[in-house]
Each structure stands twice: as C-alpha cells, then as structure tokens.
Image (tube, rainbow, N blue to C red; front, side, top):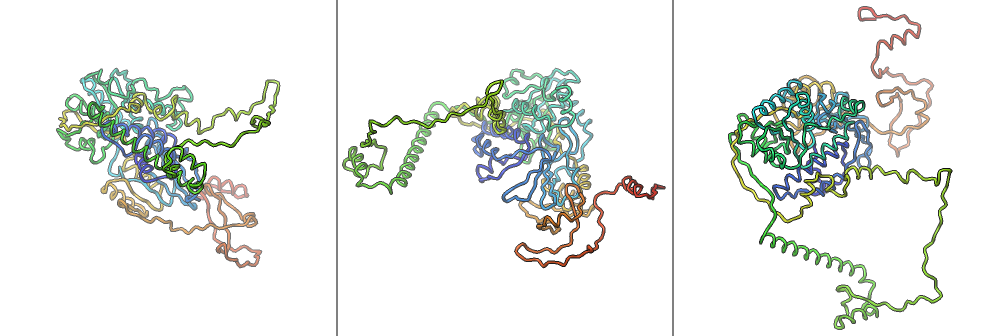
Length: 624
C-alpha cells in the first residue's frame, strides 16, 4: 500500500487535500499503519506520528468504488478520476484521470494474473490513453508458472516441518499476506496437515475480520461461492490469529509456520522470531518479497547469504526508582508551565476584550478591586474576583419566567401514530463510524485486545537496546509472491494499451533503461524515464478548447456515438467570449468535408445493411 507517508504529510507538511481510495485500502490501510506505529514504538521513541495522527490523516479520505467516476471541484474542476482493479492488493487501484477528453492512466504495481483472492488488473481495457504512467520494477524478471510456484512453496515448507524445524515468513500486515494465507489454508485442508500455522501482528484479528466483509472486492470465484454456499474464504480453520508471542513460547521448538510482520525484519515480531530461529539449522526463513535497500531482509537475500549479522535488540520497560521519580517531577513541572501559560493567555484575552469597555472610575470595578486590595486600584485585571451586583429586584407582581410551548399534533391511523421512517434510519456516516469503532468507543476498540492494553498502559517507560551478533545457521529462501506482473507481461500490456506517451518510474536504473529501450525499439511511443525530482512535460499535442454552443445549433447537428461520447461535424468560427462574432450568411448547401469512419466496421452488420437496401452481397475467398 502506497500510504506510509500520509500521516507524516498531514501532521508535519500541512497536507489538507482530499485523499481518494477504495474501502479496503481505507480500512486495511489504517490497520497497516497502526501495526507499523506500534512496532516502532515498542522498540524506540517513535514520534514521527502517533495513532491519533493516523486517525486524523484518514479523516480526509474519500472512498470510491471500482469504475466510479468522481468529478473533482475547486482547483480540479473539469477533471474526472476513476479507480479500476490493479490486481496487486485488496482494493488496489489503477487510476484513470480524464481531462478535456484525454485520459491519463496511473498504473504502478499491477498484476495481470488472477489469484486466489483477486482478479487480474483492468489495465488491459484501456486503449490509446494520452499518457500511461507505470513502473519498471519487474522489467528484468520473468515468473514461473503460478501452479508450479505454489507447489514449490508448499514443498519447501513441508520438507522443513517434517524434519522437525519451523518456518518464519516475514510478511506485511494486510496486503500480500492474504494470498499466502489462502494458499496455506487450501493445502493444509487438502493434505490434512497437523502442523500449526500462526498469523502474528498487532492487528491480526482485526485484519481478518475486516477482510471477511470485503468479498465483493475479491475475485469472482470467492464472490460466487459465498452467494451459493455462504462459505467465506477467510473463515480460516488451520490458521491461528495471535497478537503476541505467548502462544509461540508455549510451543517451544515444536514444528510450526509463523507469518509475522514486518517484512523488512527491522522491527516487529518477525525481527525477534528471526533472532530466535536463526541459530538452528533445521529452521527456514522464507521471504515472499524483495527486501528494501538497507534492511535486514535485504542483507539476508544476497547471494551468498551472510554467515552472521549484527542486530539491535530493543524493548520497552517501565521506569522505576529514581528514574520514575525524576520523570514524574519533570511531568509535574511541564503541567505547571502549561497551566501558567494558559492562565496568562486567558488574562491577555480578557484584557483585549474588556479593557476598552471598563474604566478605572467605574464604581462597580473600583469597589470590587478595593474590597480585596485597597492599595491597587487596577487589580481588577489580575486574577479572578467575586463581585456583588445589587440593584435588580423583580416586582412582586411579576410572573415566573416561562418558555413558549407549542403542542404538535400527530397523525394517527388504524395501527397507531404515523411515524417517519427517516427519523429511525442511521446515516451512512454514522454506520461507518460504528463499524469502524466496533462495540467500544474510541481508537482502542479498532485494535486487538492486546494492542489496546498496550495503549491503555500509560505507565512511564523507556527503551533499552543492545547490539548482538546472530549466527545465521538456518536456511534462507526467496519466492516471489509480490503480486506484480513480470517483465514479459508488462511489455505485452504496454503494447496492448498503446499509449501516446509512456512514463516509467519505480524501478532500478538497469530495469528502467531496459524497458525504455524495448518500448522505443518496438513502437513509436514517446518514452520518458525521469530521474528523482526531475520534472517532465507530457502536455498533449492536441488542441482542445471549450466552446459554447446554442441549443438551436445542437438541435440541427447529426451526432454519432463514439464510446462514452457523441461526435458531430460543425463548420463555425471560433472566437473569445468577449468578442462579437461576425454573422455568416445562411447557406442552403452545407460545406463538403471528407467522410469520417467512427467505430469498428463489422462485415456481418454491413452485409445485412446492404441486403436491406436490396443489394446482393456474398463472401468469396475472404473477399467481397
């Protein structure tokens, strides 16, 4: 998911623009950032953003459905955006951006292959967009057949488990891990395997609970199966969802499969489990995605792998003794300083609002101030004082104050009082809030119980760290389950879409240059491969203008449908709105122009058209 910097941008950069995403990306994106933030906080004084900052950032998210056209306003007036299936993650999108009849397609991280829980990308349905922005991430890689890959994956796991070892799969929180969960669930069901499988993140149960409700966003097989048999593919029978390591520690060295976040091995449960498993040759650490540069996962994926790595082990412990006392004194000092600042600020506001209206000669003010501090006539502006105001005595003949009362008459029928159903219906926003917060109220109820306890534990704490060298004796393996199209498929998709201009991003220099040379050699595309922070101009070569056409003119033109639009031929002069156009003399004979073929000509339909006109038509040797 491409949303890791969103809370930071909102908090530190002042981003206030609306953010567009699908419902699964909205829900699972929050959980992904929760898991990351909690994992960082447990081992460091992470302060780039908090859980509250994550909530605030997602307040600006506008949720869209697949193929839903959304018209932007304000600065984006005239621009239409629409999300389409990307096939990489649940709810992942390829964005179609339309302006003045031209399409810009943003397609980074797409997958053309249908998987167990996702349909393939809809990118192939676009033809001749003005600009296609895509990535060269996998331009140099070619995949093996998916069935063979899945079989190799299961065989590698079973081999280790039957030998008495355990398997660690460093995974993401709520993205590609969903496909791996279904693979394991399917093969464990078919083979009746007894080895336990654990899915361990700070939000594992919440993740799967949300995924169960997103079946309409998955592939057709899952949706149809649920419609006919009510079987939910994510009612996992062989996968146990856990949020801490207690259950793993009870198992000890027993064979097991553990899917743990984070995939980078830098922080999270996967980091600690790797340190525990690495010393045993019978164990296996199997990576399902490429590690990012500079991470522990990337260091272990080099060939040959290192025999030893240095890692930092950190944990958060409560403060005790003198440290706790010093912390409490510091917090008390901070509270007093904040209270003093708030008091001074309030007094300044009182001076600004009351100073111009009150005078020192005011008897009410003078009496109030001198009654407390006779030596300081101006002390009415310092601190709070009690003032007795006399002189208002209600007359004995006055009545008690009353509020106006109006009796509302209700309609009744044979069954009782007629009600308005709208008064009892819940607004969509309120339903979203309830489903997001669950049974509780507040941020904690969106997390699993263990994570909520961690947040509610407000005891002062600190992080202690120590470096250690880990001997890597376990087996290391990498299998590509990233869910991205390979180089051969990317080239085929680009050739099919045939954009006027192609922009390549998100890839190594070698992969980007390879794909650029291939597209330039095999097509007439204008290919751009910008460097980081480089700005390129992909302005359309076409000239498009907005013109105002009268209803009388539109009623006389002959329109033909072309895709989502209608086109017609009009001869006219174009001028600015503030100019007065010269009235052309009426012409009884329209000016001639070349014929234009709109759409595709189907020979069968054309044959029927000619036959209706009384012409004999036949096909012979593939010619008329």
